[in-house]
Amino acid sequence: MTGTRQHVLVLDFGSQYTQLIARKVRELGVYAEIVAYDCPVDEIRARAPVALILSGGPSSIYADGVPRADREVFELGIPVLGLCYGLQNIVYSLGGRVNPSTEREYGPAFIKIIEKKPLFGGVADGSRVWMSHGDRVDELPDGLVALAMTEASPYAAIGDRKRRIYGLQFHPEVAHTEYGKQILANFVLGVAEAGADWTMGAFVAEQVESIRDRVGDDGVVLGLSGGVDSGVLAVLLHKALGGRFHAVFVDHGLLRLGEAEEVVATFRDELGMDIRPVDAGELFLSRLEGIEDPEEKRRIIGRTFIEVFAGEAKKLAKKETIKFLAQGTLYPDRIESRGIKGPSDTIKTHHNVGGLPDELPFELLEPFGELFKDEVRQVGRELGVPERVIGRHPFPGPGLAVRCLGEVTPEKLEMLRRADAIAVEEIRAAGVYDDIAQALVVLLPVKSVGVMGDERTYEYTAALRCVTTDDFMTADWYRMDPDLLARISTRVVGEVRGINRLVYDITSKPPATVEWE
Image (cartoon, rainbow, N blue to C red):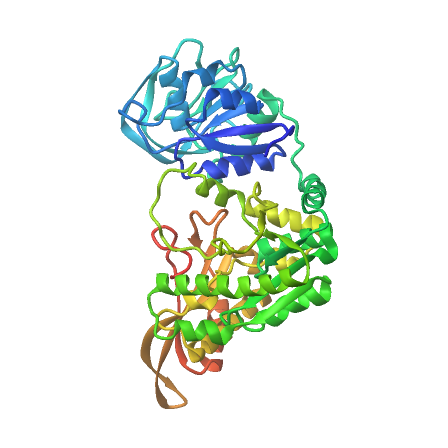
């Protein structure tokens, strides 16, 4: 909820970058919230944002049945910035003309600035911007003028100073636009005169007070995985509630080498929380026996996790009043669940604590419901969470089950654990762990011939995958030093019995996903 905090509303027209727009505005210290493009004007007025940003989108503005902004949006008297399709929305709504272009502009372009103020202060003329459009503006509405152009776009930026309505044909929110952050700052902090009052220090103070007020004298239970979201949330809840907070750590037997022991040592022994570990590895493995389909593996793990967690939560509730179930739900999860974004294909089933049985008498507590992932990490630093938790690479809820392609067996898991541990150890030793967004080893259901000690082998192949990314919506493969790759390969093949070949995955996302299953 925005409350009395100054904020920007982002109207979503289906762009793949919409969440990135909100994140970039928040990096300026101004809270940003995403709403559907057809959010009623009365609701926008009631929310009282300091500015509106219209996202891009895949549609052609002149086509039938496409999403368009309500014309009244431009009569609210607050600053408006349209990005790409958002610019075309402005032009179309105010009486200009947009047509298909004979030259589709996709990728880098270089802007010639016509007017420095108010959007291009501190921006170098000729700097690179990122274009992605097939239509072009041929005629501006009355009152709007060109502020910048590119070789293919005479209206790369437009504006009306009197009404404070502006548009950019390019995407300032992506890293490929050199001065994107400066341009957004010029609009949000300059044109809209927003105050930078969105800080994680203030968020922590607000949430501690809010949690105490809501929970009162009751207790809270959390399903702790040891990852960033649940780990930081555990520390926040412990700070707010002390001994009335309880964490259940379900060890499903699919964790990495030494991970279960490390989670307990960190949160119980080092941070002093009530952590209740449950060793359920045999149960999970028994239910996964003979299962090869990745979606079925995820469903089995999800159902079994819920069953085990619910059982422990009921035990707790018999001893004291446990009224709340905490979850590390993030803002992107809320966006998707509320259907703000358009429909998309299901790539894989995500595993979360959601879907708990109705008979569990708990209210949901979701303190991170308005945060992005990078903001959760900042909260962790405010709370003094160990950096090894905050900076940890993502790890899937179903664990190594989705990195062990085909049937999951104890023998395969042991190979995978050891290979993974070697890869991470060498990556850390080389000082590049933080340069990589995610590093993982996958065990393939493929055997090949090898030679070790003058003897023939016929063993499994493992794949190493390392990616770089800002948001995991897209990712590129990490250009690893060949000597480091050689060390990892030599150690994996030499030290892990059952693996005689290591390959390196050089596929970007898209077309591939980061995880193999």
